[in-house]
Image 1 (cartoon, rainbow, N blue to C red):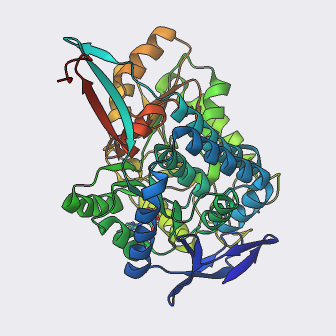
Image 2 (cartoon, helix red, strand yellow):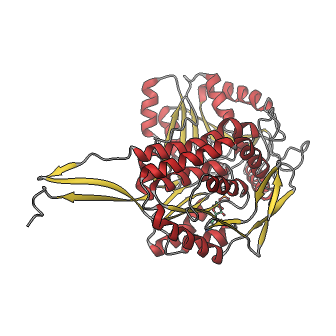
Image 3 (spheres, rainbow, N blue to C red):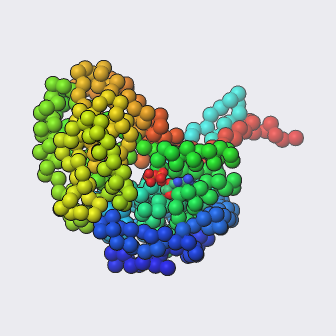
Length: 486
Ligand code: ADP
């Protein structure tokens, strides 16, 4: 079964062993733009999961033995295919998850291409210098591990899928990808691209379906060698429990409640500009610095400038290049976001901007919201909202600012704005987070480790860290030559 989406023909079936596979059960894929049903997507379960792992295992027999040069060439062909289809992929993803077309075209899809090229190239220079133990030569190698199950969320589907697919395939693993049920379409197009690029059947498989069925079946399969997951903490716990039964290594990138700390010496335009960026993707970004912590001496000036910038944000159809803030991904998600705001008000917080759905636009559009005076420890300050909702609090000293930044069970990212270089170093060192940005935001490099501290994740991916995860890292020790001769 297929659907025509933004003039592109998209298969709504699974991709298993190089074939399209339907399911009796199907689920509705709804566009956040106008809540229309795009199509009925195949809902995989235990059968489809088993078939996909069968296909991936059998493909591993040959893919796992290909040379790094062959795999790198294959990944570059996939990158070429993605590059050639950027306009289609961007348009389909916008219909599917409501993120801005302009961001997909300029930023997201080119990064998808880069994911494949980067890990292809990194594979070719992956080496650890040999070293000597009393005349014995130690040689470290990264061997393919087997079948990798990759489970991904809806907020940046193809970007987050390929951030896992590319290193897993480069490592020599074969893949079963389970995209999020709210935005399954570009994974299906990726399967087409991979097939056109000549990836052998079974090397990349896509199983569509809801998490508790398709996802749960995949992560329970004892034949799986690696599980990489990006999503929520409760789901991570469920996956970890299943992975534990089979002792399968996991890599988790989870939620955040990241701080953006503005010191009194900060460049105020920069600070306000970075704060307004936190509404990107309508706030549906795990890395977003949603807790604005501002030194008391500049708090009022910062808030006044930020309110002006919020008022200037244009909300609307994500296909319109003039739009800054699009819709929430589903009605259930919009209601969840609104629930957080309602309860914050009930707890005594003040809404400085937004505070509810955009009634002029209707649909799933939620106004960019700024909340002040939330009581210490209240839910809006501790739980991840994952919508266009920021809180602002003030602090009186560097020590207090850092303490407030770290007062969270999450630790994905933190942003610091200061013009004092010594303070920047001190504060970056004191923050508990997988990534710290100083006077910038979202500068990402695939060579860098990426992941979360505390409840924001398990493990790191990027550069060598990805290969360490997706491979069996082996040390071979060679006695001096001649020692083995009889
Ligand atoms: P979000 O809140 O971002 O939707 P989820 O953790 O619910 O986060 O979903 C992220 C991904 O995890 C999706 O692909 C979803 O289908 C999948 N998923 C949800 N529940 C499970 C589960 N029990 N086992 C495996 N995958 C799951």
